[in-house]
Length: 303
Image 1 (cartoon, rainbow, N blue to C red):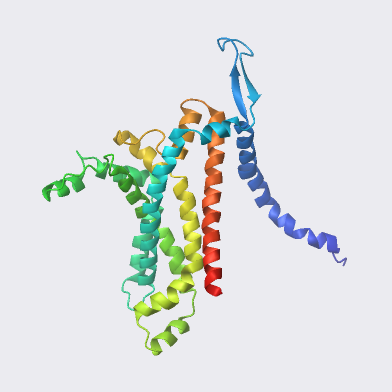
Image 2: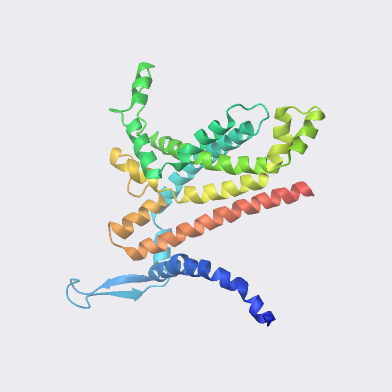
């Protein structure tokens, strides 16, 4: 029986990776490359734009990027997303951490039911969840508004001053369960002997959480924060779905909504492509910036 050569054995891992690499090339790398290509072009109209050859693509280099970076609507959208993200990240990750710690407590009751109940909103499609919450926000239909009115508080949950909080509430409701599960799974992977030893030394559940569990959760907290930052920068479902219910959400409320408007409403695919690349770059900068801050902080503590 012939033994496979060393070169043949070294090629086996690439054979197993080939399907994943092919899918990545077709559905990720190729679309990204085509988007970058479109972002460097623009349509030039000759005469009245009628007839063959009246419209043609021309290479404009970085002009579309310069226009995107100078667009006041895009920067206004970034500011709105920044406020929205501050609300979502703080509340969502805080609740996820709190629920994970409570479910991992030795005195917790109905743990399995609680896990499912907290995670279940994440399984609801974003559009369906936003529609349900949207009708709860509409003043003429909402039992929440009726309750607030009975308490003497007249609040329009889709008003200009409250719509950001309403959208943040939807994102928090849907995202807490996933992040809680990541944190809870990390805690369950820790040997129970660590906790028992701490309890024998007189540590309370609060001290266990503050001095043992939260330090253990730091890598998982970093991971969930990075994922949440990327999802927040790309917020689209909530404002787009709520927009028909109120006039306080513009078609460019978020940067990704502006991409959609430019591409499919005004038909300017080239500007939309450039703006989408800018959004991707901002997501990378924010994510790697957060990782750098965490790394520097952890290195400073270790010293």
